[in-house]
Image (tube, rainbow, N blue to C red; front, side, top):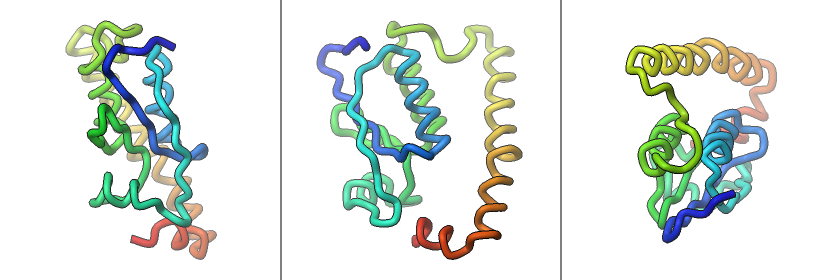
Length: 133
């Protein structure tokens, strides 16, 4: 993986997070080197709590010590901050970019929401363990 001189990237996530996987994929497609830090959601680290004080969730990307939260915000940031690294993550045509964003929103709101809600209803004790805040 390529390293951009002076750019330090660290990703705080979990192995089972689809949103963290989205960020990992974007970093890998761009060919960017990064440090991966596995977060224990049953015992959230002070780093996670301080870097994402609103939601207290992963993923969090640190770029030169500055924290970014929410996977699509992170992906858009990667695209803007590293335009010359690897292929573009979104189409160059504004219409095609809008269509791609539509499908991302659809998948987040319709597809990913239901398994999460189903798991929470079947295993409320596990859900409450990981979502204490």
